[in-house]
Image (cartoon, rainbow, N blue to C red; front, side, top):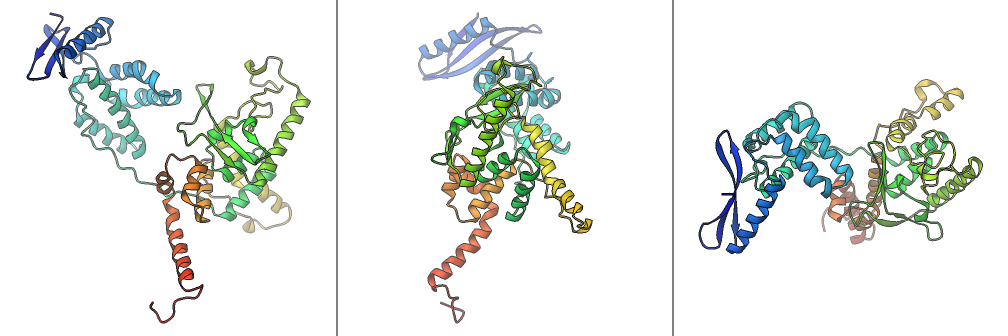
Length: 413
């Protein structure tokens, strides 16, 4: 019998589909359906059609590794962004499949998954990374349940590792000024760094900015896409959330800096000429101009490589080599030279912007809109380190308001 509907009480049916033999034993897929008999019969027809197409796998025979690869191809490839899919696939290939891939799908247990979590933590992976592994595995196994390959998800009862929020490293105002001064002297990406600090935009958002979104008349900038590189390919995609797609006001200094950058690009384009092949040109060293319309780009107009900017130029600016060299040439003794700036990531320029905004008393809702966070609570949770200083300032202002700027006398109210 290919399949059958078995009544198991009022409005409850078991749909059973024959999947074949495994070592002489007959294997079935059983699925509980609540509703009318016609609903169960429709599920039976769908399952039989799926079995005939080869979309139903026998749980006893399928190793978890094979299932995960099938899940990536059948579900994830059409449901998530390319960058997310690449991350999923790399996690499966490098971590999940080598550790758990040989276990038959039906034998994957909560204990085995919990053991995997502990082993990865002991191997030195961060709690955040291991938590991500569990999330991928849990989502994949949830589809195994949905597709009738498992009765329950063995990842559900496991405990995700607790992520300890690391202390955010941000510069103070003086360090920010030193950084911008060094970048202005030494770096071709000074305007990029200035925009990062003054707007709080993410690196991918900055690299995806186009001149069509820059309004010098009303001093504003539209953030509409994010630039990614994946496997040598260039991806320009919309931000993940509606809040991340935003138009932000610009301070005058940044408007003037971008205006100067635009004039420089136009002059360079005039000097080197347009590439005759256009945007389809694949010559990496082509010296002619490629009109991608990007605000921040290579000297030939092509998109910047985020990794190169962060790992080469950004770190060089942090070292303050240019400033130290100039001072050394003026006779400043070595012990009096400024120390390199504290090592931070490019993304920490966004944190610097947010910290400065909140510490200056900018309303969290305004900061949320500028940063493109989905909620105000996300802004407050991310930058909770600013709260103690704000609390001190708030009590000072309250005292000044109640006592007209004079401290309360007599030790009481």
